Length: 586
Ligand code: ADP
Ligand code: MG
Image (tube, rainbow, N blue to C red; front, side):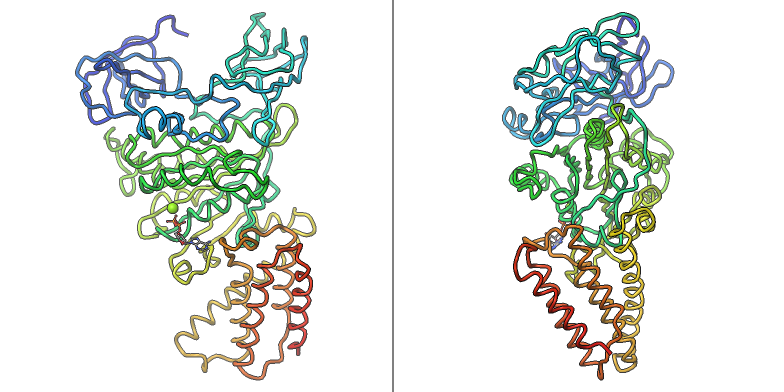
């Protein structure tokens, strides 16, 4: 490490992009402070060329002058990690927005930075090691309760080699800055350990063995868990036109998916959307714990009015926090809404750097950035032998809902599951508006082979139902051209079976208190009913008979979907449905 930090001076400025002539040794992505007019503006090195560096400043740069001093920090742009991340709402530079609101009314004056974690709050620490115990980076030394989870305190990730505990504090109340342990490293140096540590946000945080994701993460949305499942530690994307329901879908998933920690990265579509999140998210109930959803959530918020580099940074801050909780052996879920805003930030930065543009003026490295981002998802066995996962899902908002554009295409090339929302489905109010004819999941077939018996059974039925749905769609299209008279009764029945599967299984009412989420057992029961209907040869005499039968049956099954499992009527309704199907059997 250099003894003296590098310094430089501004020689050119273009928007937030500064050219700095410097002396000393600097690194790519190193933090810098531009000293101007008594203020200190944070920025990041994004290009080094000889003794000139390009620096992207995270804040408005009005009034920056030729010759202004620039200090290089040696640190890379980092995230502070420790107890207190949950319940927090940060901006893209990890400034806590609630404190910002208190101090400065939602908009942070430039040059002002707040510490991400509460310095005063005391946490109830319980040690998990004793003096003399061997440790390494990322091994647990204790834990504190944080909301509903056990927050493991780990040996700092920058710790090198084997270490030995020299001293560990007794159980008690400590702040994140209190020393809780002393650890001797391989060179005999003793390091003081607190509960907080830092990690550079653009580097994956992952210690332990990487494992192949082979279990589904149950989201409670039938259309996902059925035909387009997502693996725990896997990736998915939800592209769709404006207003198709991407945000509602992400909220549904954040509430109901099997994850202990949820990270929401909101790269705002509109400025008002962020204020809505700040106001509304803390009020949401958590159906899983009976408490508030925010208790196990960390939100990173951005609006398009924030400087471009802060927008670019937000997804990395969120990912690092997700990886941190995964490292404790927890199942974490990161939802980014929308990654298109992030890609636009990359485009703006690239444009200012005068890089050779690729398709639609996005930088040529767009697809590798997107790949690197999703690559940070995964299932790991940590250094203690515990399994943790980070599942990542990103909304994409292509202009006009046209999926043939670079951000959607680059995303589709790397994710494991594509949930494509369509305007025609949302216009027809078939929610969630995920189009079952264009979406896919690479995990579906795998679960059909590696899943437990119930999952295998479900995959088999859904596979058949999807085939019927495709036939049904073909017949529907033909019918809209030649009219119902041109279609055989047999084909009409196939059409109605497809519609039945769509309306009772794929569609789900987010605003009904029962139907809003559907557990695995219930999904299987419903799939069995769908499978029975699909397999049944019916004895209808006329098209009208068939239509009437399916309208009645769908209504009954939807009613059943709205009936809680504990309700005495639940079984009665199911039997009535099966009875009705049997009654029309050939
Ligand atoms: P996007 O984020 O794609 O722009 P939103 O998620 O904000 O779209 O959804 C737009 C509107 O569509 C919502 O305000 C709501 O009225 C309707 N909507 C979306 N999803 C559902 C759903 N699952 N059930 C019922 N209505 C929905
Ligand atoms: Mg939205």
